[in-house]
Image (spheres, rainbow, N blue to C red):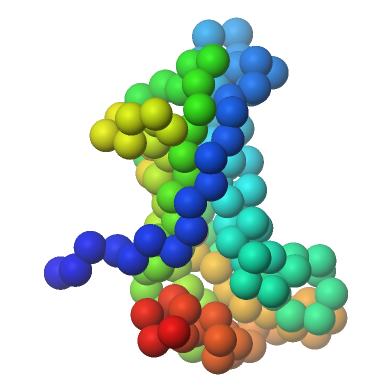
Length: 137
C-alpha cells in the first residue's frame, strides 16, 4: 500500500493557555489543532466553511495520543488524504514536533461528509475537491 499523500501542513506555536493542570496540552486542544488545519486547508482551496450553501461536517473522529505536548513548543499539523467515497471522505492527520518531525505527538482520522447545509442532506463531493483528494489534480 502507498503512503498517504500530504495535502497540507500548518505550523503553530503552543500557547501557555493550551496547558492543563497536569502540565501538558489538554486533550481537547488537539482537536482544535486538527480542526484549524482542516479549515485552513479547505479555505485555501476556496471552500469557506461558513454553514451556508454546501460544505463539510464531521461524521466521525478518532484520535490516538502518542506523547504529551508541552509548552513551549512549535508543532506541525500534517493532513493527508484517506478513503474517498461519493459524499464522504476521510482525512488522516498527525501532529509532530515543528523542530523535529520524527517526534510524533498524536494522530487522527476524520470522516467528513459533504452536505447541503439548508437541506441537511449529503451530496456528492465537489469535482475539484475529489480530484485533489484522489490525486487526480
